[in-house]
Image 1 (cartoon, one colour):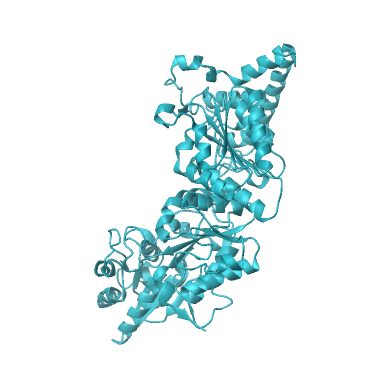
Image 2: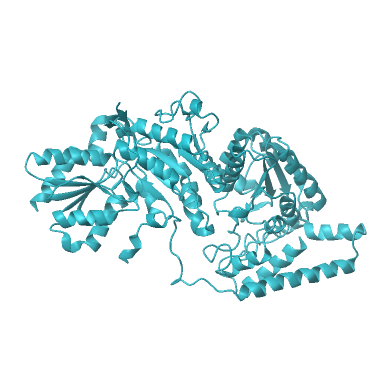
Length: 322
Length: 318
């Protein structure tokens, strides 16, 4: 049996619905026989009647409703049809869910699933990566699984956490990643993973960029250059200790993210490594992000807009020459 | 109503005396509507009050001292100095803590009711308040629509106090009567004269009863004039004098007092006694809250997550 990243997300939700009466799924087109725009909830409405509910196109009210249900002891999973549309729900996620524990002492255990990132032909409004926006605000945990196994165990963990979790699942990985079986347990939440060991350069990445970084590392290894790839897994909390330990081994840092370049997760990693591990660095730390334009539709433009194995290789080579 | 009016007048003088940091937002002129919102709710019901709902909060059971603790920034209050004035709640007692973004609490209230339904509870309702200003937000529209889609037992009490801060009705909306929106949302809608306590009790009480009995969600639109500024920093000089003479500008408290005296329900001496008792109660709450400790930045738990081991240690750089 082999499962895709998308099927792992479906399986995680099936398990959650099976094991925990407090769980329900709330979102556009998730119910009925349709099972979501990407089929992440396919068959679940039939298997769990009344617990996988279609909603109006009202992102603000979808999250608001989930927040209220969580206050009363439920564990809602919200599916945003696309991460991009969560901008409509920003207020509820940031100002309501994110502040509630701090203000009142009562945490709000919602999980908001964001189908994130680019696929060719999706254009400016169906391709965005929002993790850095959510990570910027207090009170939220932001997950960015890069493997089938993590997609499964981290979603189960997200629902178990008492605080609000933004779970960024990557649409490109949905069909491109496969695993033979699903694990019962993953690394603890908040712990980064060494996805590939190497001595020459640390590439810090997350979500789909981990896969691009691994492909780049493979190519560079043919030239005798050994790249260590760190998969952050959660961008908040950020496991800077694992990153620093890697940089201590390699002396060089490249951080790769699919979001827009101004600020964001890659900037945060570079800032923390520079201030906490400046003495470890043999060269100025570098970042690679998407371009500072909206995300283009045409494949020729899209493939040049975001980082990929090819330009990670080029950036890594330049950094290794320093 | 009397207690709350006394309380809020005291808050205003404390504010003017520089003893309250931040703002003071009172519900003067809206007490009849608001008190009716709190009075018909029972244990297990949900109340999501808004800015001008001190009367409803008190009727729902919020301790007077928690009002003073929040305004005066006591560490022992429900918000512990982390949020102030009307941004308080006791979510474990089903009094939700509003955020400033208007309309956002409608869908949150829907969610609490959905959870109760999931758990198989019976005989519950939720009530949330809004103004005609907040009724114009996208969040409000989304919340109303989803309430009707979910058919939860919700009552939304909207008070048209004729001003969104300084903006009058004619720049807020263009429909003839806000209650007509009820039909578009899939609610049952009723108007009420918000200056008439008996009418408020009747109409809001009836709506709570209907929602509890499984009728569609209920929208009540009450008409009053805000008898204060938006906050106490605002002298409301933009309200024209002639508007203050219109029927909806009556002071609901004065009307109620006059009515009970006219009907010989109480004599005017008893009314004086009530006022004295209210002052004593408010003074006692203030004196108690003033003795309580303020939050201290060095001792503060600067942590926005309940899951301690998932806190990001970004601040350690500083």
